[in-house]
Length: 126
Image (tube, rainbow, N blue to C red; front, side, top):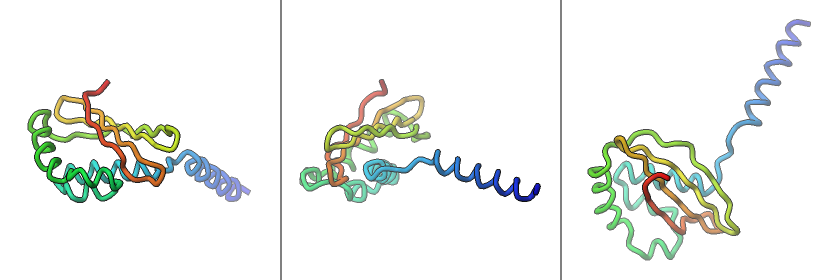
């Protein structure tokens, strides 16, 4: 009987953990991929989830110029806060607070209905 109760308790804990687990959205995955690639200096990889309009803006070259300047200005990369995902009509917004040196920076990634990155913005943390 004790073994059965222990097994039921373990099953209940496992189900509760699974229910509380965070299911990452397509846009959140794209945002994480973008930020990871930028941190690695893989500027072409950072744009792999961009929609056609964003890809047409020649962003890998711009990232290659701007991202190292940001690191120099704000400091070394630290942790990221948990992403906040907000549906906005047929788009999704992912806000991730980044820690660089003593500074906090908000990265905003907007995805279109197909889950492709349609906007990317960096600004001081609010």
